[in-house]
Length: 135
Image (cartoon, rainbow, N blue to C red; front, side, top):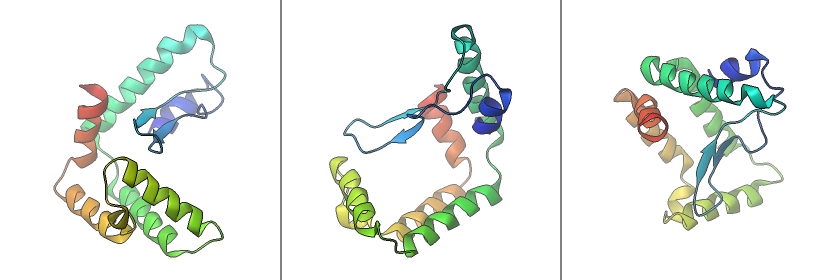
C-alpha cells in the first residue's frame, strides 16, 4: 500500500535510501521517505504516509500477501548462498545487541510460526501500526 500511495503518486522518483526498518543499531528506527521531491511537496508526502498508515490500520493487509512474505522468509532461510555466514552473523548480532538470544535468532522457522500464531489472533499488524506510528 505504501509503494502504491507514494511512488505511483509521482511526487518523488523512488524511496529514499534510508527507508525501512533499521535494526543493526542499538537504537532501531523505521523511516519512509522519497527522493527527488519538491520542497513544497513535503507536507503532501507526510500526509500521504499518514493517510496510508491510517487506511492500513483500519482495513489490514491481504492474508495471501502476508502468507507469501512469510513463506519467502522460510525459503530464503533454507537456501544457502555464498553470503550465508555473513548473513547469519548479522542476524545473530542484531538480536544480541537488542538483548535477544543469539541462538533463538537462528530459529527462523520457530519465529515465523510464532508470528503466524500472533497474526491468526487478528489485527496484529494493524495494532502495531496504530501503536507505533499513529498514536
